[in-house]
Image 1 (cartoon, rainbow, N blue to C red):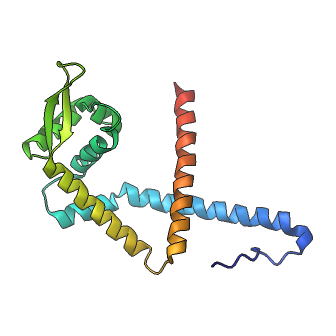
Image 2 (cartoon, rainbow, N blue to C red):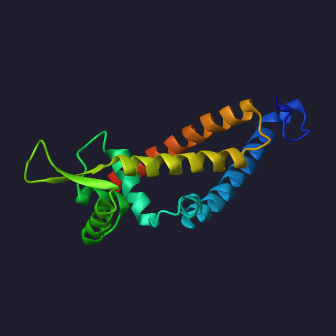
Image 3 (tube, one colour):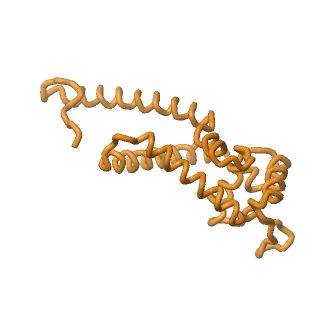
Length: 180
């Protein structure tokens, strides 16, 4: 259990001011951690570790494309255009990535059941194997990063991190709606 004492030794009457100051310090720390996390994400830390360990010859954009299919495939039919849109890349680049992954056996093309003129993209067993391996490496990385944490700390962090991310996603959705 963590120490739940106030962040300052302020008398009981000053508790709201002390709590506000503590919250401000906490929010500043969250902002600093977000900056550091953004830099790690920008450097593609986990993806680069995974590619190095797997030695498959894949590139970061390849695992991004496979990940997009996994993420949106349960909600909609996945086309090259949808992959390019999700990855925020030019459709012709998306097409080249998909074609390369099809050649490598990670993806396959199929006709749409809704519109036979549309070509869909699906993950093959080999592609699922790569995703599984990446997830295992991600799990190992998280385990190493939380070494020494108690189960309670991990559960609390997971719950709060998910809640924080949901809050950011809601803000992003509002921002995108205002931009439209």
